[in-house]
Image (tube, rainbow, N blue to C red; front, side, top):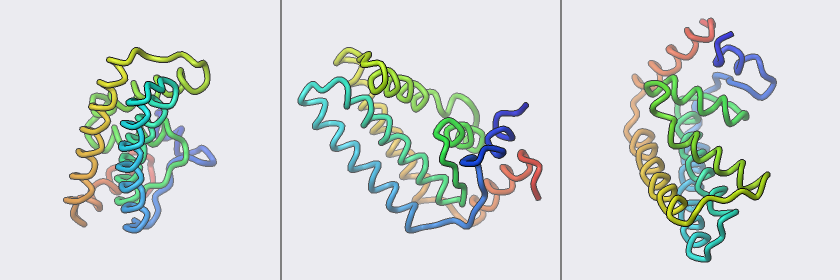
Length: 158
């Protein structure tokens, strides 16, 4: 079965809802503040919370985009899959998927990554957040309608 269709069948999966500018703004602000905290954590050489915060900065920015176009999804893997589908495929989500793996390893298995890789991840997260901020800031109603229609067609909804 198609992963997006599977995600739409989950209780906390993909839902097309009215776009919400306030939630969009709140998630983008949270992404930016989490990036700042991730930098502080890295300076303190905290190799458990660094990957966690780096991933969440990514995720909040991505979720800001989804809220901007009116997509709700409480399953992180499904949110990432949805953004990848809408924005051009698997290559658009490689960074966040790698950061999610690092977060899971650090948070649940206490497996950390070396400082240089964490520094690289933080730089990648800054770029990712900036890219989503630009998308969210410049998106038009026509773009929103396009993304919503594209997802509804994929899910088999009208």
